[in-house]
Image 1 (cartoon, helix red, strand yellow):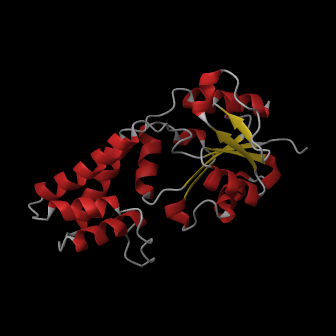
Image 2 (cartoon, rainbow, N blue to C red):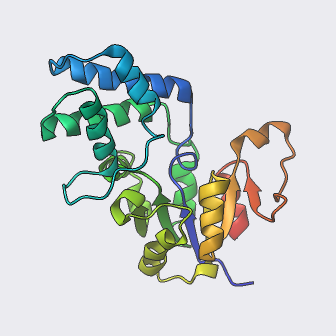
Length: 239
C-alpha cells in the first residue's frame, strides 16, 4: 500500500462540531429578520418564515458575472420574493450577519489545533470545504488561527465545484504535489465526503463522534470506509 503523505480535512462537521442546529437555524432566521428591520425595510413576517424554510431547498442560482457568492445570490432571491430592493452593501451585511449567527452554534473541535499541529510538517495538510460563501471560510481560518496549518485551502464557492464531485480534490492535490493514493480525506458526510474522496482516488475516513459513547466503535463501515470517533484517532491512522 502506498505511503500516506497527506491528510486532507473537511471543515463543518469535521474540524468544526455541529451543536444545536435547531437553535442555529433560529439564530440564522432572526439575524435576517433583524437586519431587514434595522435597515428600515417592511416585509410580511409569514412570507419571510416560509422563504427561510425553503432557502436551501431552492435550485442553486445560476452563475453570473455579478461579483456575488452563491449564498449572496440566494439571499438576493429571498429579498426579491419579499418585494424588497437592497443595496449591495445591505445584501452583503445581511449575508454576513446570518452566516455568523448560524456559525455561532458550530464550535471548533477542542482537539483540532493539537491534532493539526502534530500532523504539520510530517504530512501535507489541506482543507476542502463545501461552502457557498467563501469569504466566511477564509475569515474564519484567520480568526481561529487555522490557516497556517494548511498547505492548500479549497472552498467550493471559490472553485465552482462541490463534493462529491471528485474534481474539487484536484486543486489540493496539485498544490500539495501529492498523488491521489498518497492522501486520506477526513469528513463527516458519507454522501459528499466519503463518496467524493473515493471517486477522486483518495482514502476516505468518516468521522462519527456519536459512536464514541458506546466505547467500541466499528473500525470499518460495511463498505470498507475507516471510521473514527474523534480527530485524535486520525493520527493513529497515518503513523
